[in-house]
Picture 1 (cartoon, one colour):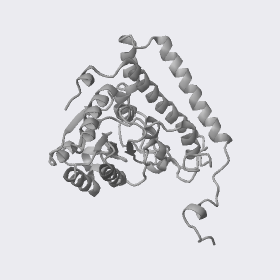
Picture 2: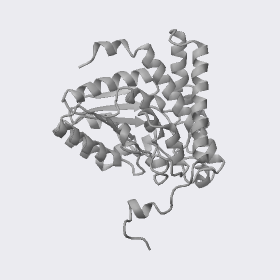
Picture 3: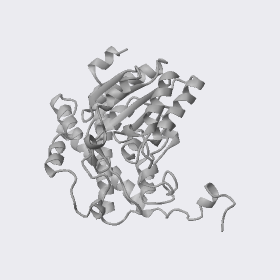
Picture 4: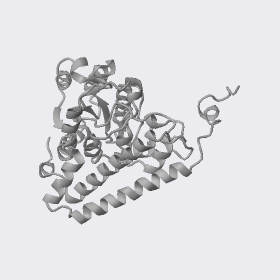
Length: 334
């Protein structure tokens, strides 16, 4: 059932908050891109640049007690859910002040206190975790909702059908959010995915919606209905958000692609013109929600936050090499 207030759209304050959160994700990712290129990071990073509207429009409806499961491209989900930028940056730098004490790295950012159940390096692995969390929430009858973020590539994995099936049968409070960014790693989606992803979900008889994933307001509206549906005990919903990743599958991927391109520069430039952040900024200014001066102030505030997070990561001590023998391999020290 659609909320009449949601037909009007988010309030001005909500719009400002969403713009600021999208900009935070973008600037954090740009800093990580620079750090990666400079050789400062201990591992690879998969950036979320271009997809910010999906995470922010979704998480705007969630409290700390609601949960999300993420992917290998999880920084945006972490920050959209309210995760600490300093702790995330330190984690990616492999420092003991990181959210997982430097042991998780880029693909495993998590924060249970915020309901962020974790990014995951295994494609489609978050689906089972989200379904399990949904089952727990239903048993506890606590009104909490779990959102499962996954990509178009994960829609071709077995857990996709399995979790949709059991979530529907048991009416679990789960929202399946497919971020269709048109690529499964280096493969264009149309070369590895037959048919339309959303049609697969429709076969389960659950509410299904397609949305412009670069329009944060459209995402906000679609997710709001899905979250209401779940909280009312009506079971899962499926949303396919069409978006695009501006950066490569992974930073410095040209090293293993030997400089070969798998998408034309013109395509990337075309999608840059659809930037969800620039698009929303223009809306805020044209509608009188923010002045140009306020936009500039937000930008300065975000820049300071990112610089503080980067400095915190650089100044922090490296991860403790003995920690695995306390939390993973207890009693197995050589």
